[in-house]
Image 1: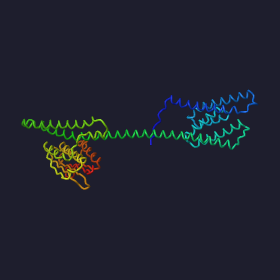
Image 2: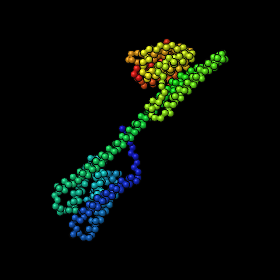
Image 3: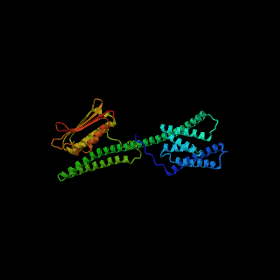
Length: 399
């Protein structure tokens, strides 16, 4: 899984995060200074020795606080010198503890073990130097030190786990957001493809009728009677008006607010097999010789499968009118076992450029194949051995 790149932290936030930790380390060191130095037996010390001890404590503490600021660049290499300085400096003790916590945040066992051992050793050495004649048994000192180090390491590991959890949740949220965006983009693309298929099927059919009657007017206009010319012009006008109306209906869907589901719900009623007789009569009215054989059982087909079957017949008639003008067209719609709906449209192509040529077929047949695939059906188009072009689709009854 691809991890989400970390966003750069603002400068002000980085300065604040560094500053308050240094302040806490300095305060902890001052508290240790205030606890340890009053307990020291300095009666036999000279002023020079006392001053040197104080300067050493203060100087080593300042160096430890300075190095602590660079712990993120080399955690282990910075933590060890800071812990070592706590041997001769009480002020460095706070920085050493926080450096060990920061090291434990990384949750690397080897680094944690090295840092904890270093802290334990420096603590025992420092205790022996400060209180050489202490009355506390060694085993008690070791036990307290181990318990304290365990708590320090546990705090660091808990912080590290929390940070990892937060980062994981952020990555998961970003991944979910990307997935949601991809789903929305996919839904929009599917809706665009659906609208493109509808526009192609509707306008291709209507405009082919317009082109047919306009061609008749062009080539036979002078030989036609005025009444026939007016009738043909009326057909052209009616088909053009129908094409514009259906285009307006499809584009009206795009103006509806909401997502893809809302668009689908706002779409006007789509034609089904109940509208097939009107489609065939319209084709016959344009001069095409269309014969049909429709099984009575197809009237009970679901609207979804009926809509796809209607579009198959419509596109096949449009292709036949465009690429095989004047040839008879046979339309057969029946129910096959499964059950499934089979649509078969055929027309002779003898002496005519085959309609399954990619340059001739355009996007129509590919759109029909996509329709059949989306509902789990099959689609085929091409010439058989007799030179007849056959478009056949088998659509599941439950589509």
